[in-house]
Amino acid sequence: MQSFLHGALSYDSGYFHVWISSAKDSIFFQSNQDKAYFISILQDELSPRKKLNDTRTSTPSFSSDIDLLAYSLTPSGIHLLLHTIRKTAIEELGQTLLYSYEQYLQEQGTIHHLPFDTIFIFDKLVGRHEALQVSKEIHLLHDDWRNDRYSSIGFYLDDRRGDWMRPYRLTSLFENKPRNYLKFITSQETEKDRLFEYLET
Image 1 (tube, helix red, strand yellow):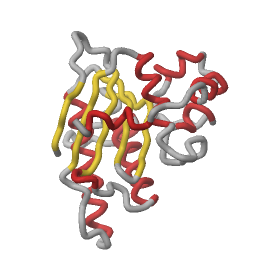
Image 2 (tube, helix red, strand yellow):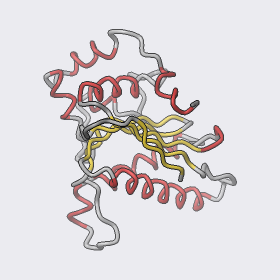
Image 3 (cartoon, one colour):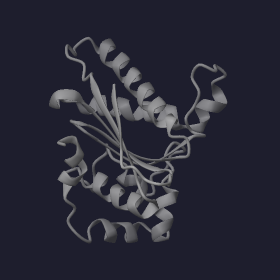
């Protein structure tokens, strides 16, 4: 896993945009089943229930270190919007997700080319207002963004809930009212390519 940290800030706001993709423009997710499985890994690793139920010290939960604010899964990879005060937890989570996903692909038997080496990039964000903007860009990555089941849009607009998702740091900015976020997300066009600019430099 090639890991890069972008965006040198003089302080840590705790907000990070994480991008995981396969190297050399390979497809990361071959099917929707693959995406669904990856979401299940996210749920397992970020749910506080894992920490309560699992007494094995070798598999700790990341729920006490990381708040998942938004996510998007596309054929080319994963975008995560996180808040954490322990930056090393980001790489630890990334390694755990990739290891579990690799194990899953090997068990399928139909995959001959694993999407690894991977590129693992995380950007420091200035604060929650920039994080809110990034959440918009992440959600608009999908053509049918309003109904895509492989993004976190349902947690913002449809009262979808789960103890592994904690968007409250952002939803409080629009008074936890879905109509306000919908107005925000449709207020202007977002340049999708902006998310990928640093991948080309």
